[in-house]
Amino acid sequence: MGRPGLRGLHPLLSSPSSRLPVFRVFRVFQVSRVFCVFHVFDRVCTRPRGPLNPAGLKTHRIALYPGDGIGVDVTDAAVAVLRALEPSIESSRFELTRFDWGCRYYDQHGVVAPPDFIATLRPFDAIFLGAVGWPQRLPDYITLKPLITIRQTFDQWACVRPARTFPGVPGPLAGAPTVDLVVIRENSEGEYVDNGGRFRIGHPDEFAVQSALHTRRGIERALRFGFELARKRRHRLTLATKSNAQRYAFTLWDEVLDLVRAEYRDVETDKQHIDAIAMNFVRRPGFFDVVVGSNLFGDILTDLSGAITGGLGLNPSANLNPERTAPSLFEPVHGSAPDIAGKGIANPTGAILALAMMLDWLGEPAAARRVERAVEAVLGRGERTPDLGGNLGTVAFTEKIIGAATA
Ligand code: GGG
Image 1: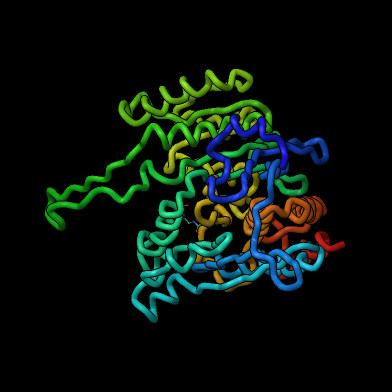
Image 2: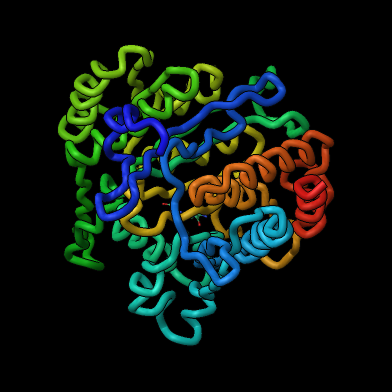
């Protein structure tokens, strides 16, 4: 049953009382002297349990939501990797159900997802999303709405977004610094609550109000999640704040940091205004280990963290419900890139690494490591998609990953 003494470290990560006790922490591992390829969701108590099928195999039920544009291409790539690995995952099988929601669904039904999409998704063990959005066809706030609703309704409050450099992938920064950081994006509230309005529409004196909501509880749980992760990594946590200009919301963030950090004296802590972090991600990215920020700050910072590692196509994201009261969602950080949709050149790395995060979450760490090592091996050989200066298409690159993962 693991180490019950750990439970007190982070009660937010323990399971609801109705289920077997589960406690998850993050573990650091070392590959080729680069720390933390990707932190992993390490099981120290009981495994997440899927139903057993007649052959005694555990079944993980996964909802696929490929979405729009290259979301479809990269989801196909991640599924191909999963299917290739499946025979080697001895005790489990994966039941994949695909939902073709998004712009094409809108063309037929007048909505991007059916009204009961939350009820449809709730029974699944995890959701895998490709990308959403195609602004030439529909306003982004319509195509994005199901994703935001999923995150908030399923209380996927911890958005975990690792970004690292890979040997073999040229980055844009002078001196080619090693980057290995994780942004924890508060994912349930902040600037993404649907609260506001537009007034006097069309008039010269039109105005808009968009309110953000930051709760002490929401801030504290995001920070504690970040501290627990920092303890498993390089023991540094940076808060992204803006309390010099936003004197209500971000002074609350600052104050909660001051309270929580007292319990984590082994973690070096600092806070930087979001604009300073943006500059310092470029100037000295090696400084950063775990960065915790509000919903909007985390969203913006993780485009930048992708860019400084070589490209947004590399980066995965996990939208976690740490209490496991609802499914968590895994996706690449990148969007739908309509300009290259259907051209067969999308980089599936972020999606494939999101698959690895999902495998970890489902209690399949060995399979997750195989996927990550395959990505490192293939990129390390200089085999890349065009966004990274290579000449492999999505399918050819995915085949390389499958070859390395199943060798
Ligand atoms: N694969 C993620 C995706 O489609 N992202 C598009 C986007 O703009 N997302 C906004 C967000 O993550 O909040």
